[in-house]
Length: 50
Image 1 (tube, rainbow, N blue to C red):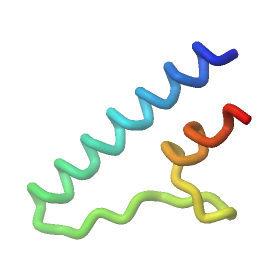
Image 2: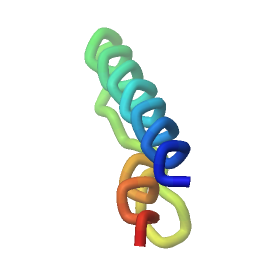
Image 3: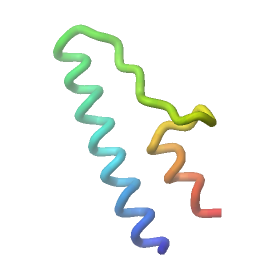
């Protein structure tokens, strides 16, 4: 399970980095999508270990 979580976390990081790059290119501010608890996908996968 740990390896799967890490794999998905790296995918989330790559997706977020690409979105940041696109926002910077278009001159917009980047606001990551947050879930109901206020966490982004990247943060949720980082904390889901415990």
